[in-house]
Amino acid sequence: MISRIGSGQMSRNFLYDLGRNQLAISQAQTQLATGKRLNTPADDPIGTAVALGIRDDLASVKSYQANIADGTSWLSATDDALGGYQDILQNAHALAVQGGNGTLSTSERGVIADQVLALRDQVVEAGNASLAGRYLFGGSRTDRPPFSMTANAGQPGMQLPVSTGQLAREVAKGQVVGMNITADQVATPAGAPDVFTTLTNLANDLRSGNLTAANGADMTDLQVHMDNVSALRGVVGNKMNRLDATSSRHSTADIARQKQQADIEDTDMAQAITDLNMRQSVLQASLAVGSRVMQKSLADFLG
Image (tube, rainbow, N blue to C red; front, top):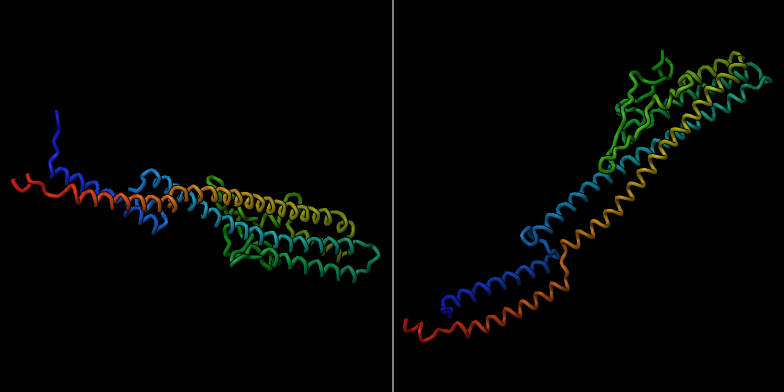
């Protein structure tokens, strides 16, 4: 059976194909103007879904990197504060060794005892170190100084109640890192009285001439505090190394994601120009052919 195509159907088919070609030209021009292959979800529904997923991943990593940067700054400031505290303890240890010398006079040991008490007061200053108005060793109470010159019956000590809350940051999916060292960890290590009591005992024993205690229990307690601050700085250093490694992994993964995103979203300029030129040529040819094919026939006039 022979199918017949009338001039009306031929015209409709021609106009439909012409419209499709013009739409393709418009899309190619848009891609060249924007530099993007995906300008609407209709351009590539599957690619759009993948690209949106990549964008979500990039946004999450950006948030993680901000948390890492904040945590790194906090830990760096904490290490500086612990370094200052460590210097105080080392100076106290040097004074204890000096004062434990039995050849010193009572007045000379009294002067050394005063220096120890001055170092005790400096612990408050070191313990109240802050970053951007937040106290480093304040636990979850970063708005309140954790140490005070009058906290312990008018003597230097920790502010009560002591906050032991942790400041946690999510640095990767499912990975939460505690960023802070709390006042109790600094001042009250296991195996010795708190640092204020330790330094007070040392000063009193030096002043009274109790060299057995000054060279014995006091030195032992002081050594516990020195070991403790060294361990705390080690904890801080390990956390900083972890954050640095995590940040590096995020950066590496981001490069891969951005390349994948560019492959999906960005226009292949050379290919797009070739396609545009080809479709423009097709359009010109179509218009030329259509102008001849769609001329009215005798049947049109007879009808």
